[in-house]
Length: 570
Image (tube, rainbow, N blue to C red; front, side, top):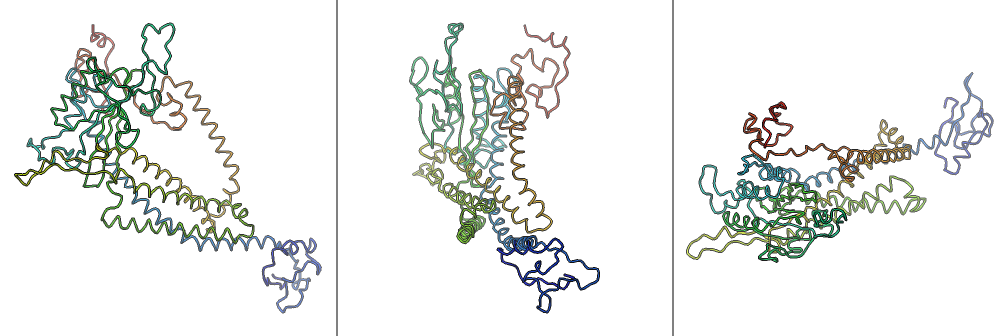
């Protein structure tokens, strides 16, 4: 300092308290000095100031030592940060290659627009409808014959010419049908798990329980059923493809368009869908070689015990192969190998730090940053193991192609008999998609760990370190705040459930209320006009307004009450 003293070295930790505690309040006297404070010539320091009017200041050695230790840690973090940043970049690029989000989304939305959003004209009411407009069992059969089958069997080009053999089973010019389509249903048992009222039991002595999880939970029926002339015509099939998700009463359609229509009409005549049916699904698989993807389209209709029919479109999309002979896939493999190498290097480094830590293993884990680092490495190991399960998925491995027989008298073969099957039937991708979804859920948690650990390296940046240290000091307070937010949100959700559960779709189930803090408003189904006399056409509306009007389209005409009463059906 200005008194002629200079720092000659860092004191051992055991002497820090002694150095800081020696001397009086004014720092005077030879007792307040330390061997680490010497004059420039090496002799004992003179406690008297060399400059007139100078007062000696007390130096807090422990504070100085703390500042030195802080700067040392920041220097170490600054040196480690480039290595960690490189590891994060490699990891994110490899994860991006694994996802293939664009192709999956585009193919799913293409099938949704083509099958679920496509419109057809109901021949009985001459009203334009779509899959989402199904409200009765009769609507299901009408949609199958007029909305689904004409689009599934796309036999002609846009100019009216008959398609080539290869393209007769191709949808939208790029997606070839793997093995026809299936019609599956699941049923509830009669008068089981439902209570008949003593007062009204004889009024309608038949009840059926509601089944959850696509009619797989609860008392579902497995007994044979059928029309009066053949009570055992339709049989329950268990695990007919890749798992219990494909169990049910199954009817397969692999024939021509005319034969399929005839078979649909026979099912309708047999009342294949009746009061015991709780779940109906039309599903089929497609192969798109242009994007190397398999797509299973599922058009599901739920039939809850209230009598309502709830249409639901689903599409499961996976890559035909995780690794193809392409430059992009080679780059992906290299990046994945680099990530694995980085994980093992970090694990070895953590083990070394654990072994040399002065406070032992318990002291090592007393630091929250060390706990976070170990958790991150464990998550990355879990990611690697799950990815190995994904790329060795038996659905991809065991899916096979069978080609039609060759013609002995020509160089052609029966292309219409080509099939892509798994276990003897059309591939079911639900299990594969669930596995992929689980993998990316684990990756999402891993990304959160990456982000939190990134804050550790921000301590090396002077203008960010104060904020990070403040957050660490407030971690208990932030946890308390999170608990209060959770309790408050749960209380308000329960209030919404008991107040509006019977009136608003956002609150009609506790699961939807509690798991969706910001529920999306869904438009309630608008009743379609059952009779032509009470339709928009009779009120002067244009033909395009004969279907349900969405909020984005033009609003319907305002109709006065007298005009409405005049059109009232008898």
